[in-house]
Image (cartoon, rainbow, N blue to C red):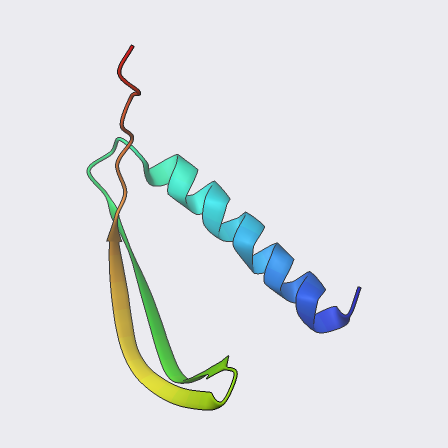
Length: 62
């Protein structure tokens, strides 16, 4: 596995741990980014901004 994909896996694991700790505490998580490049085949897009996630837990209906 390449260093880049290992770093992405680590970032994903860290995010899941943070979301799990915040869930049910009426918390949110703000992700800010600058010059984030999304490469989707023939199109490349550069983004600046932030995303706010409201972290909730929902129980499955039984």
